[in-house]
Structure formats: structure tokens, C-alpha cells
Amino acid sequence: MIITMMISVFVTGGDTYEIYPNQQFAVVLAKFICSSALHLMLFPFVERSMNHMKYINNHPKNFTNPDVAFLIAFSSFIINILAELINIYLLTYQHNVEHCIIHFVALEVIVEIPHILVGSMSADKLKQRIFSKTHALKVTNRGKDIPWSSRKFPNKLARYIYKFFRGFYLGFIFYG
Image 1 (tube, one colour):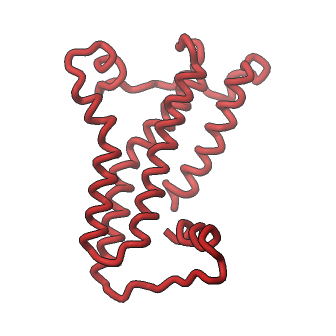
Image 2 (cartoon, helix red, strand yellow):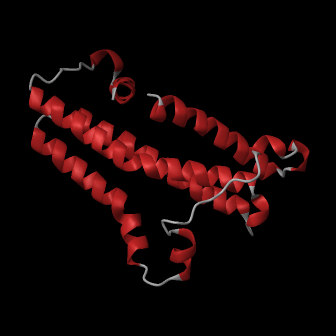
């Protein structure tokens, strides 16, 4: 929340921007509960997209086009991270409990749309193979065991992207 506030200070005018802390404990509590609830809701999706990126990067032979598969997993990661940042940004500027809850629920509904779409697919083979709860990607190839010279350029780039965002994930999301 502090990072979002600092960014908005620099974007909106620097010296002329003043932050007025909210004096109502109920509003601060509502902001904390809403941001924590969305974080706990999105955490499994962020973790799953990180696992997909790792699997795709370590098993490119299992995919017809591993670059597109990696981009899909990466876009899922970015969308979930952006949803958390937007939630914090929206909650920063709310001045009463009702607005905090309204913005939280609206963002939660927007985030749930892809899951509603997957849930509406009935008896689809794609849903059974990819989105089933029992389907777990098992990483058998370790990244360090794959020779760097045998990787193609997009796979090397994907590896760097994965490692950078894995560090971001562990530093801010998991340990933060």
C-alpha cells in the first residue's frame, strides 16, 4: 500500500500532494481486511502460474509451442499481480467502509470471471486434462540440469523472466 501511495505522489505532483491519514479505525480495518482477503484469494493462482512457468521452461519438449504456453502462464501471473496492485490502489483512496467493500467486491468479481468460464465448460476434454483438481504438473527436469547451450533463445529468455519474477514473488508476496 505504501509503494502505491508513493507512486501516486510522484505521478500526481510531488510536492503539492499531501496524504491525510484516515482517523476512523473502521475504515482502516476494512481496508486491511479487504486487501488481505484478496491476497489470500489470489495467492493460489499466482503460485499455480509460477509452477506452470517452471514446468513449461523445464519441459519444452512436452509442448507443440512452448513459447506460447509460457506466455499464457506469464500473463496469468501478471494479471493476478496487477489485480492485487489495483486493489491496494483503490483501497488507498477510499474514505468510508462501504466504498472499501464495494471496490473489493467489484474487483473480486472481475478476477473470478476466468474461473467462472472454466467452470461453465461441461464435459470438455480440455477441462478434464488441464483444469482438473487432481492434475498436477510434475517437474522431472531441473533447470540447472538442462545445458544452457541446448536451450533456444526464447527458452533462455523465459528462464530469465521466470527467475526474475520468482525472486519478486518470494521477496514481496511470500516473505513480505
